[in-house]
Amino acid sequence: MATIRPVSAVASYAARTWDEAILPALTEYIRIPALSPAFDPDWAAHGRIAEAVRQFRAWAEARDLPGATVEVVELAGRTPVLLVDVPGTAGQAGPGADTVLLYGHLDKQPEMTGWREGLGPWTPVLDGERLYGRGGADDGYAMFAALTAIGAVRSIGGAHARCVVLVEASEESGSPDLPAYVEALAGRIGRPSLVVCLDSGCADYERLWATTSLRGMAGGVLRVEITREGLHSGSVGGVVPSTFRIARQLLDRIEDSGTGRVLLEEAHAAIPAERLEQVEATAAIVGDVSSGLPVVDGADVVAGRLPAEVLLDRTWRPALAVIGADGLPSSQAGGNVLRPMTALSLSLRLPPAADPERAAAGLAAALTADPPYGARVSFEAREAAPGWDAPPTAPWLATAASEASRAHFGHDAAYMGEGGTIPFMGMLGERFPEAQFLVVGVLGPGSNAHGPNEFLHVPMGERLTASVADVLTAHVAR
Image 1 (tube, one colour):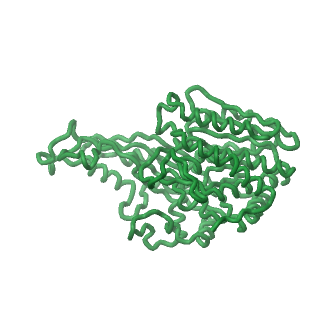
Image 2: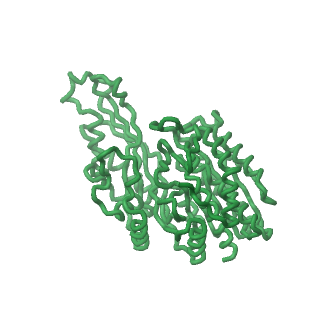
Image 3: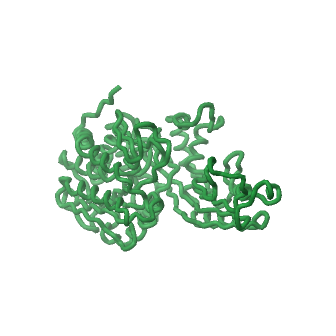
């Protein structure tokens, strides 16, 4: 069944711009393998991030936004950022003006395997309401949507404050370059009274979802060595323990393998009463959050847990994942050899209020203390990103979000925590404690960010864009 588009002037502008300008631009952007530096250490030499930046800059410069400046800022040795400064409709300009900061990123996750036939990470495919390909929804659409929202306000003669659009290129690596840019550009950005982040998700495509919290992250590489070289397993099996078994024992210090509960005390934090209430409300809307997951036939990943408990598990409780390994040959190439080394890349998602540095230190201490059999064990910490818990929502923003959601989706806005990490939010929360935050996104059921068959739900993008336009209008009138 075809989606019926809203007919307001703002919605019409957003839909038309998506059709005529955003979708063609996103199609070209998806073709660019602009891997984040963590996945492409030679990113500067390869030039793919630079190619994406050039495309974004050209698109921004072609917008009809009087007085706007578009600039690529590059600090030595760091990925670039794109900065678009749009004066307010009443002429407000410069860092002293009331400012809205809108955020997105253009770097991408790696390809992954498992794309269905006809799809691929760098092969954009528009199939009905879905635009498939890596990075369109996470988070390439953000700059296009932000500038279109500003344009939508202007198209109806509406008002907005000064808007600064900041697009970075290292988010998928944990935003290691962003603190330096926030510091270097502080005098130009000013002190935003509203931050709009477009890099989050939604629990369905039927309303505007505002993100109330984001998990943090601690991670690194556990390395276990027991022999100086590989040995015939028939000769030493039963005498020399396998490094994989030792690694399993060490992981048992961190996680209960029967339940998945993280045992590390530093990885837990108290859940605020308000967030518990919001989780119950979200559970009433979405029900079983596992129903759309691509699990194999017969699998039951929630094991009878209540929907609210599952939501808390993915937003306010820690979770451990092994996301990579070294020292393991393929199943085809593996011989009867006791391997000398196993290295596992670990990702520990943390509650929004947990201290990532403390968690990383606790992780290292637990894994390396008193190694079994006297094995050589090391842990190289590689990530320690803070989570974020939103400040209380001002009445004007709560009203604006609900009115925008009703206008463009037909339902009230809803609120949810997200299980992912956006380091920028924790950074801004500390730097601008007086600011209001609207954290939204298009990553809904089945969109599969970071995985195969990632897609952007186009009607969600259009309606989200129109909703942000309405919030910009409400912000200047607050």
